[in-house]
Image (cartoon, rainbow, N blue to C red):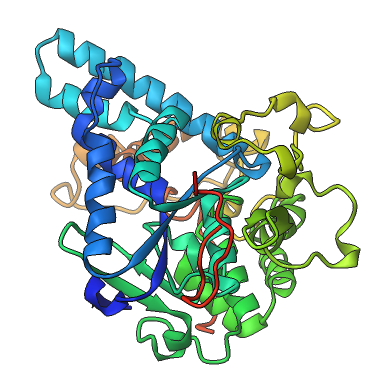
Amino acid sequence: MRPIGMEELKGQRVAVDTYSWLHKGVLSCSLQLCKAIPTSRHIDYCMHRVNLLRHHGIRPVLVFDGGLLPMKIEQENKRARTRKENLERALEHEAAGNSAAAYECYQKAVDVSPAMAFELIQVLKQENVDYIVAPYEADAQMAYLSLKKLVDAVITEDSDMIPFGCSRVVFKMDKYGQGVEFRSSMLRQNKDLDFSGFDKQMLLEMCILSGCDYLQSLPGMGLKRAHALLRKFKSYDKVIKHLRYSAVSVPPLYEENFKKAMWTFQHQRVYDPINEDISHLTQIPHDLGCDLDFLGPYPYDCGSIDKVDVLNKTYSVKEFRPEKERQKLDLPAQKNVLTNYFCLASLEAKRKFKAPRTTPKIPVQMEESSLTDGHFLNISCSAEDAVASTTDCFQGSPLDFGRFGNALPSCDSAGIESKPVMDLPCRGKA
């Protein structure tokens, strides 16, 4: 990563993750949008950045999200529930007179709707700005434009563009045109993590293993640990086998879902502006199977496609419902935890202690001053008293198993224009 100014991209064509701009723009007018009060501040936010790029001699291509990808239905439903909860909290805070808390909740409750995207598209048409509506995710569409050399760079806030294989990505662009640039060619010069010996496939598997939009990471699996495991074992299947042998709780379907996540990054359906048709990000291998709906169903005839229909495209959840209902999974339990070294007391341990019979000994003559009656008061006690005293002892400093219950074994550090000389068809042209 290195700092970059937009003036360095002069004369180049850049794909823009438009929804990332809209998500930032709606924060300034979240209350109005949540209450359906007319406003255009989010549109003005996006157009300010469009004009900033054009001022520096950059030709932007704004890319919009399309239909909902089946691999993200569960995550999108979770986000919708969170937004609904925040809207309820915002109304409660507002009724109580707490405007600061209400404003914060409104920002978390606002969502970018297809209607907002369509409103922005009308302005882009008037300003003669190129745009593309992706069949599904804008990330995959921008990656396709980058791989086909139809754009020179991508502007986004989503780090998923790295596993998608983009060669040049600009993150965190501010209103002054300053950002941070990632180049895949400079990856081996990274200082925090050593990527020498990593290829594109290993980088993709590392990102999925550490957690992504298509697959949740395993407990305790962060980016550094995923990097160390891939560096040592070179492939995801060997990593998963190692984790299972190391007593890590790996769900039975994790490996299958890992493959689907990997294929979604590699072969998701996108729009081909050259042939004006739906294509795949990369060519699908023959052994992938027939059911490819998780990559995005083929929902329409591309010859009669309408941009408004794509923006408002919603898919019935029942189309993607599994054949079998939800089943309880018996996951392997962790073996190497501290609590396994403790067991419940047996019945013998609960019985009252009876002292064995012994032959009486001749008492030894002692001086009266050597012992007092108080010394004999506590000599004889029952087992219940002993257990009670021991329990009191442990109650003063209870054992804390929380630090060890989830412990995992450590591992080794181990129509748009691509060139000025050719005109490409762009769906954004009116």
